[in-house]
Image (cartoon, rainbow, N blue to C red; front, side, top):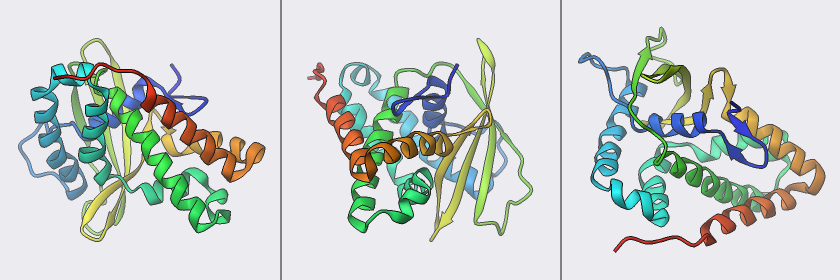
Length: 218
């Protein structure tokens, strides 16, 4: 199964892992290193929201987008993620283009995260111990997603410390990087239609998804 499909779509294992990034729990009572603990802390509030609002999540897409944006987005470094995803094109873009691209890329990713809310089932997650647990400001949190009906999935989260917070800027599923896959897709679009064309395409995709009729809960 592909982990990142072309035309700005992400495969199910990536969306599943992105959700679990903020919906995991520790399998041991011991104190986790700070980056893993950051994941753990956010997970508790999100897990409660998912449990208490399961029925609404199934039918109200706008509410799902709201949850993803309010609960997940603050823990992702979209500026760094955007720069890495665009590569050399980020450096060449104007300040206005960078800001507009970052806003639309965040919208795209938030909607991607949202689709995972309907996909996850029973699972557990195992953190793989790291050696750089103290002074490092850029780290890789390594883990495996364990499910009863499927082989384990290797999921690594690239995180860095920004001020006092640990933020995610890439997810690597079975050796395949979210950033690397987007960079390839975005680069092709920029070569064909320039930065303006890329931003226009992502904006159009986001607007089309937002405009899809949906049943809202009462």
